[in-house]
Amino acid sequence: MTGATKFPPNFLWGAATAAYQIEGSPLADGAGPSIWQGFSHTPGLMLNGDTGDIATDHYNRWQEDIGLMAELGLKAYRFSTSWSRILPQGKGAINQKGIDFYSRLVDGLLEKGIEPLLTLYHWDLPEALDHIGGWLNRDISDYFGDYANVLFKALDGRVKKWVTLNEPWVVTDGGYLFGALAPGHKNRYETPIASHNLMRAHGQAVKNYREIGKHEIGLVVNIEPKYPASDSKEDIAATKRAAAYMNHQYLDPVFKGKYPDEMAEIFEDAWPKPWPKEDFELTSQKVDFIGINYYTRSVTAYEPNNWHLKAKGVRVPHKTYTETGWEVFEDGLYDTLKWFKDNYGDTPLYITENGSAFFDPPKPVNGKIHDPLRVDYLQRHLKAIHRAISDGIDIRGYMTWSLLDNLEWSLGYSKRFGIIHVDYETCNRTIKTSGRYYSKIIETNGEALDLKEPFIDTIK
Ligand code: BGC
Figure 1 (cartoon, helix red, strand yellow):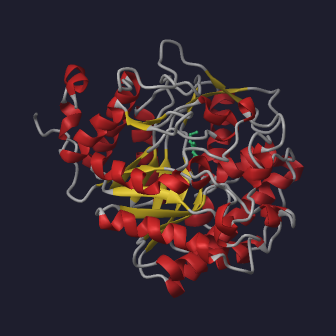
Figure 2 (cartoon, protein in one colour):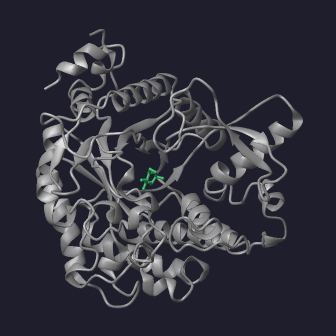
Figure 3 (cartoon, rainbow, N blue to C red):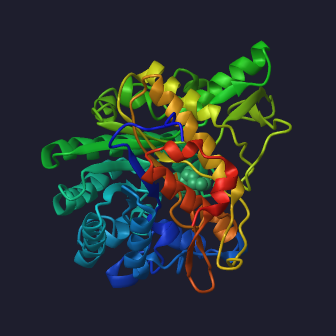
């Protein structure tokens, strides 16, 4: 080993999950239903009719899962709390049993020296709040702030890194514009309003945290860098629109107190004008860090038939694509990290998700799951991060997506992202080769990235 890829001391190596994707038992111990409960039980909306009723059964197997994390040597675990376990109606009465579940989980992690990173919202809005407008209701920023306070009071100190929202872009693009995700609306007039209320809710939680909490709080965004398909004026303009919509829309309100100019062009008459000025005081509350979720890039071309972006993604030949149709492109992660620093400055960064769905068999073969493409993906992306750190970007940690195979939202159990395999008939867990490899990387603080593939085969 050359030591060329050694990471900074205290680099936070971890793995990520989300409540509805892994927990199962969604209505146990007094929890209220979330919008995913309703969505997944509506015929025709989920691939193969899958639901999160059992998922990986983490709600009952959390101790075993902490054991696996310890076996892998994880330094951190990013998970989300289910709002409707804590407040079954989304507001009002608190369900102590919901708090107790996460409190036990946090204690279990701390006992093993694993730092918890807690995400307050990973897409599972309480159904009761959806009944009063969900993210379209301006009051939701207060409801979210109150929910956040319950957890700040219960867990701050034991939890030292808090995330308000996971990927507001997906919440609105999937939930309010195209309807592939809960609550399944398809309404371009709703979309900017839902986005804006998400950002106000984020700001409200950060503001509350400054009164109650003593540690760090940030926002997680998904960034997909956009590269023009050609040098044509049209392709370059389309690329700018796509980048504004997906990448700038949720960072500009935090760091610049406004939306990118392209938003009005994109949403045309559906873009509300003007936004109340004081709202941006809320959205631009100072954050302690930004979490970046990175999976792929998009090569973008002008497409007049696409109503809002007038843009489309173009497939790049001779490249590896994952099972979700995403190009493996690690340079995009490097470019994203650099882009963040150039646009928004020196706020500390965590990679809060990065990973790949590749085919794995439903059951282990000879007790093993060998996943060379995921190993390759991991290696490439970690090297890109190392390069970004060497170039002076302040990256504090990496959370691979995902700890476990899990419910890939409306794609059900058809896509496996885990470094730990889950047999969905028995819920048995098997650490994949990628998990063993990741463990070795953690143990050597990155140096194992220099090892060549043949060694990976022999990792025990
Ligand atoms: C989400 C995860 C999801 C992953 C893979 C991210 O957008 O935060 O919940 O499973 O991507 O699609």
